[in-house]
Length: 127
Image (cartoon, rainbow, N blue to C red; front, side, top):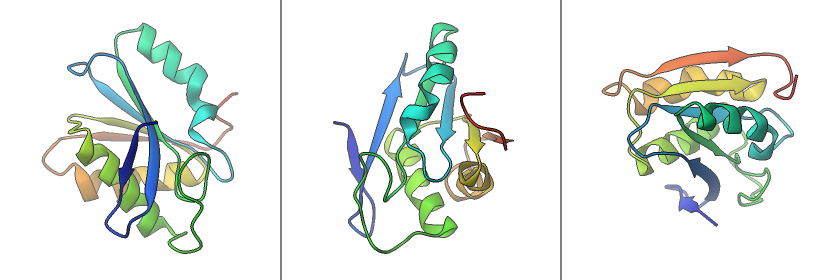
């Protein structure tokens, strides 16, 4: 399973599909979902030539089930760590619910030099 370890030692699970040189799209799930809820959208964009990435936030899905760090700052830092680890550039961020709130925090934290874009989605990811 692909995992990264954050600065505070939390293990974060992620999926990274598609050509490494393609335009990346990063999907951020809402509470209490997991990255798997984005599979339909990820497969669509993958089939259309994009690199697609999603991660399970701490305490969700296959990431570490930790008792601390359940706030937007930690969530954004964790997502930024995935972006940095994969060296994503010119990234599009798409989020649902809490994941939508992350879009604004991830881009400034990790992509100031990468010219990323953020989109927010407030309806269920499978709608």
